[in-house]
Length: 117
Figure 1: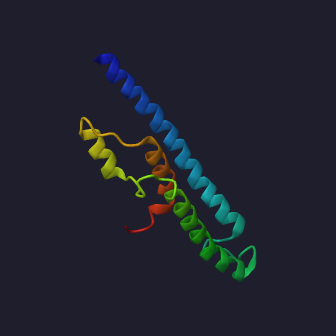
Figure 2: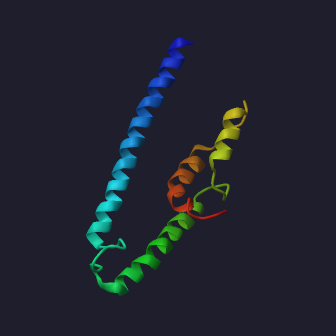
Figure 3: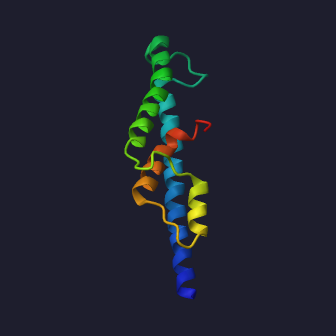
């Protein structure tokens, strides 16, 4: 019992540390891209002109929607799994979540989190 608790605690610490480093790296990369392309409001002038900024503002969300649509075609159940599904699966003794659907849902989540389903 103690071995199991120690293993889970160590696994949680490792996963938490890795996710923390990834989160800080993500924020730093967004700030770097904002400085590179002068996208922030306080920027003196956009790097590619106002027209290019408009294209990026419309094109990036459209590309994200396209990625999510392509990912959704590969999920056999044609629905994304969310935190509620994971909790339900963890609490029931005989339920199983398909690995392929779970992985694809996790890949699509960064694009889906801004959409109100």
